[in-house]
Amino acid sequence: MKKVLTYGTFDLLHYGHINLLERAKALGDYLVVGLSTDEFNGLKGKKCYFSYEERKKMLEALRCVDLVIEENCWEQKISDVKEFRIDVFVMGDDWKGKFDFLKDYCEVIYLPRTPEISTTQIKNDIANKNI
Ligand code: C2G
Image (cartoon, rainbow, N blue to C red):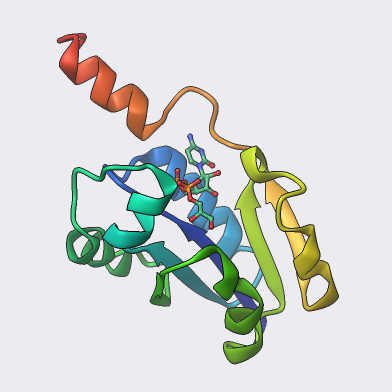
């Protein structure tokens, strides 16, 4: 069984996230998603609209997601790859190069982002009543 791992905040889940998750799953048989906790998002300078539990519930409802684990820090990736016997690590290409250190442990693939959508864009459009 080929296992794939990715990480993210996935706030205000949108089709850009879904594109990434479905493409990640298509690279293997089992997809593990490291979901940023509310505390870790604080470290990332991100304030989420949905709580960790609410974001987790939405991801777990997706057919392409097999397991959701907590992402509590930047440093847990190597141990996660080992613990879950990950074959492929996937991130959107806004992270290109940032996780190449994982190449010693698994394949590292950066996938093109879905260009025109983001959580920030959604928040701005709602704030500016562009909807
Ligand atoms: N993404 C995408 N297209 C978009 C928006 C996001 O492909 N339009 C991808 C991102 O590249 C990332 C994933 O979806 O791979 C999750 O995006 P975010 O929730 O914004 O994740 P981020 O805050 O970048 O956290 O340790 C890594 C971090 O947890 C990643």
